Length: 441
Ligand code: ADP
Ligand code: ASP
Ligand code: MG
Image (cartoon, rainbow, N blue to C red):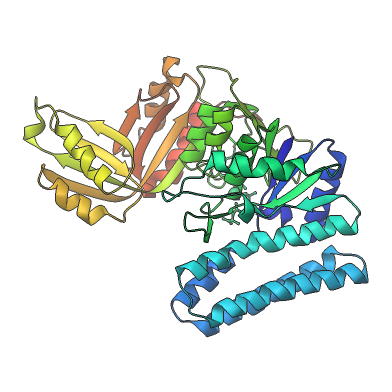
């Protein structure tokens, strides 16, 4: 079986939805199709939810009206017959009644999460009926019947797999199963989600759960590029990446993949292919166990980082100091990305600031604390980059005009991480692009 995920821009216009149907029709074999919400929808639902939490009912209603018009026009264009246009309007009307019902009630965090889930529910329902209209046999598989997370927000892969197996066995001669990305149930059985961009993660979890032959992520670009194309002009797609490389790039900010996407696929050894819906012929990127070694493959950047430095002369020649520092972060369930040490100080980076003031207070018992906010981690990735003798030299030569706050190298064989002030990010990414890659003409 294949798992194919189509992102927001890939389903965001009626003609694109029709194109996905063509593509599925032309791809032989059984497949699970994971859809995102239409582009812009989740952002709008977030705004509506924020208004409602702040008791801004009028502002929420204005957003609802605009979104409703968008969906009415979308459904009219998507379907060709009168009968299916009526079905389309019924679907849209039903969802917008629910939005208004949620808005009229006591709106809390739980209603907020329910609201956010509607984007994927409506896109899959519209798409399923489009397939019906074209007489392409398919089934709608509700993600809320099998996708779950535990109390630590971690997906329950084994349970997901147990629930999916019988659902898939009843497929008979239907080749296409349509399901929602992003949404799930939490340990309280409430509607929840896998965080923004989570449809990639859904696809990978399903691929791992059913041990699919391949997980395909269809988006609006021809694969993973060597650098962030939103910031750097001359980037190019990478044909092959190892799971480790892709995992680091996703975790450290390559937006094309949700940060956790690669984890389940790698665990079950299912290759992930990144493809472009707007250019099907483009090769894209294959992520698997294979890949060339000793090369810089790509760069990614993760913003919103805070660096915390703990300085103490008691660290000198003392054992157990680092343990005490790390225990404070563990106590407040705050994960650390980068670490660098000197004889008398240790610097770490975090991206979750919820417990920062408590952490600072407890660390003060261990030494003086300095906190730098608005930092960016730039992650330079390549399988066995550590074996490339000039890798560090090239990185430092490229960044000679940029102030660097921290450097990590040697923690894994696959990356060099640099921490700098976010103000220098764009310049650093551009300089590294020129210094580390031979740009194809
Ligand atoms: P989708 O809606 O299909 O999930 P996303 O917007 O989440 O699509 O991801 C695709 C976008 O990721 C691209 O349009 C591109 O701007 C951005 N992006 C950031 N870094 C990279 C990278 N290294 N390679 C490719 N795309 C990247
Ligand atoms: N619709 C969700 C979002 O915009 C999930 C996704 O598109 O992957 O975050
Ligand atoms: Mg995405």
